[in-house]
Amino acid sequence: MPETSRQRPLPAHLRIAQAIRNDIESGRLRDGQRLPSTRALADEWQASQLTITKAMEQLAADGYVASRDRSGRIVTTPTAVSLSLTHPVRPVRPRAVYVGGYPGSGKSEFARTLARETGWAILDKDTIARPIIEPALEDLGSTIDDRESDIYLSRIRPREYEALAAVVQDNLEVGNSAIASAPYLREFIDQSWLERIIARAETESADATFVWVRCSLESMLMYLRRRGAARDAWKLANWETYSASLNLDLRPLVPHVVIDNDPDSPPLRKQAQALIESFRRETTER
Image 1 (spheres, rainbow, N blue to C red):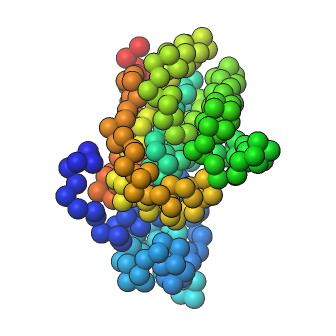
Image 2: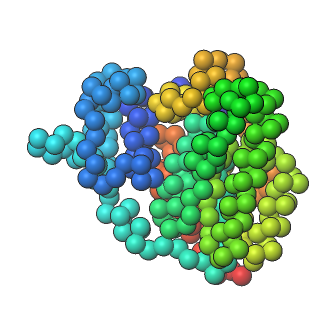
């Protein structure tokens, strides 16, 4: 849904319920895992206990959470989600799926959800690069949370994306499909980069798919606050300035898929399944 169509933010309990559902569908919260207390969740989400209670009621109604005597609330992964993990998708032509979006948009959650549905490799830029780039930033005289300076943008960032692209290519070369998750804010509007990625896939008889994950500014801020990552410190401290700089109409310059990640959007798993079905149609139409 376009940002301009929203009259007012959706209730906080729906945004929290949706975020926890995403964590369950993406495997961050496992079946049978005990959830923190209402008070602890209220602290984590910077919300009232009443808001958390309403969020839990929504998740229970959707089949994602259940109450157990003396155990509190337990994650109850829907059966359909569990069954999908035993049926990996192995296409004739391997596929690289590039999942981009602004920080806090939910791109990692969608990438993980898609990986659970397909059994494909999940390659997250931050997971791969952070242990290397943070000490490198300090060695260059910056700080580990720097994502705005010329040091990061000109010397570190290009190497992150080169490394991620190389790992994707390694997978394609051995016939494995892979899902790469990163902002791709520059790359998705760089026609030359996009053409190179598509050409590299073609050399391995593989396909490349580009996905853009979007959400409202309210949802984005909630995600960033909750995860509390050092790399988000400047964004949170300067939220008005940062959010005003975002181009919410940004999209890849090639054919792509848009994933909506707001409480009134279909669950990420449903959108992942629709994407997988489009892959199957492409295969049968060849």
